[in-house]
Image (cartoon, rainbow, N blue to C red):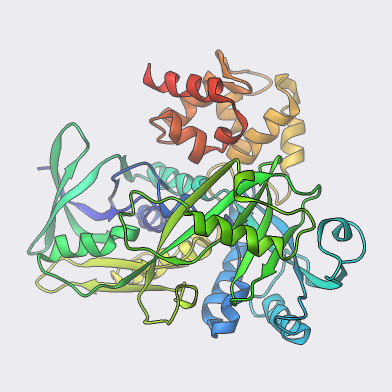
Length: 487
């Protein structure tokens, strides 16, 4: 058996990738294993926001909101290619929360996180364009505030890539099927579908998301109390409902909220739900009731009514929230909680809860809990491709005009890879061989990069996680990309 790793990370979602990156940057030898693709489950099924969580203020989650708002600007600075600002319009509904409460909540939202990069809240007249044509006439006033959009799957991949470039070993489609403590080491059995290997590690970070309790029980060889409340969140993707980049956040009569967000140029993203989940986290899909709930929520506000059958696609995920005995799924804390077991020797840290926005701080706190030395470093560290100004996409696209690629193709590539677009198309002085055009706007050079650098193994990895090309390509295009990986 080879030399033990300092840290074994189980789980290739945002928490696991963030922990692996931070640890590798502190000089630890790190192995991350993920039984499927990176971001294959919860981390690719979010509402795709880097935000403070406005509604969490109602539950007095002030620490979580403050940390999230601070992280919003840190992440925007460090990954401006895959994160960008958006403006959200919150209509005042006279039958729900009073206007003064909305103003107070947004005042806190603007100030408790030390906002620097994003514009503040302002009042808006919903009877004027563009809102007058989009919303129902009974809505007269609202508030517009800032949050950020994120390519959630790519955020995970870029953290894993940065970890790899700092020395970490990243193994996708590799499941940890056995875990046993032997004094000061953990012995882990890994199965990659073809063979079984064993490794040893001094510490384990259990970031397995919906499977975190199962991994903990496997490691401790005893039944442990259930720490998770699994909550399903689903979204609908419908054809674009309005022109313009602004988003809407709608209040529901049950106290929850629903987003309507411009998505992938041609669509609108609607969601999300909060529904208790007790099935297999590998098999998650939107229910008819959820689809109807989402449509009813937005139809309360939108002039153009939406039906479940209008959806061109949908997605669902299971949030592994910490069980805090809250009365309803929507009230369960989104904060993260750690449990460390070091009885008898080598420690295992299990991660419960968390959200995309706070993954970086979660990683710092996880390593602190594991007593890992080294100075925290990720606050000012750009993610791969992110060495560009905030809102600097147009300049990078213009600088790549020499390639002759259509502007919309360059824009997509810059949104995905930032300045690392050069690793795909080369430079004006040394253009790369793009190879065959496998699908409209998708060349072999990009697929090779995704395979060789970004851990992609199948067409699905590319179509639905490394990108959202699956929404834009027809069946022939999707099949061509899948065949390229199968060849």
